[in-house]
Image 1 (cartoon, rainbow, N blue to C red):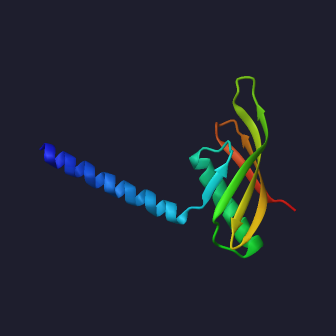
Image 2 (image 1 turned 45 degrees about the vertical axis):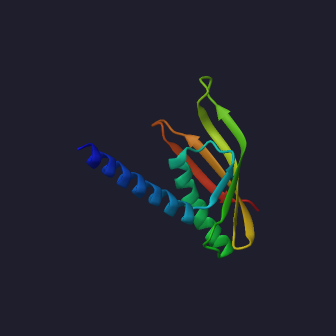
Image 3 (image 1 turned 135 degrees about the vertical axis):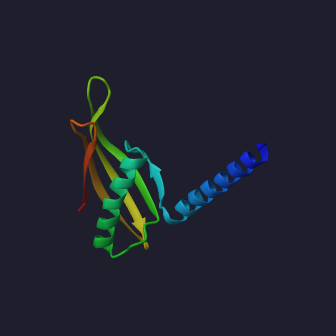
Amino acid sequence: MLTKTKQHSALISLALAGTILAGCASSPQFSGQSVTDPLLRKDVYATVERLFSAVTQCRSISAVDSRIAKIDQSPSGAVQKAEETWLVSGCGTSKAFNVVMRADDKGETDFSVSPQP
């Protein structure tokens, strides 16, 4: 019984490693600082990706470098609003985007993305 458990654990580990490696192959390199958690980053990235493609005609983002421009916090320290600049690179070109995130009354985060001039 112990052997089956070890084999099962090994198979799960291999499947997880394969998933992680596959995700790395198709995901851009993220660097810099951001207030986003992984889920919010994924949502913001999807919008940035569409805008970058529309502006540059490039569908292959290789890197995203984010920088926090401004943070507004409540007295408890919770982030109420954050403004970031995401510098996106791909196909030999780079474009900067303004990302504004606001906490809502439901504990979620609304965001907007716009290209910098």
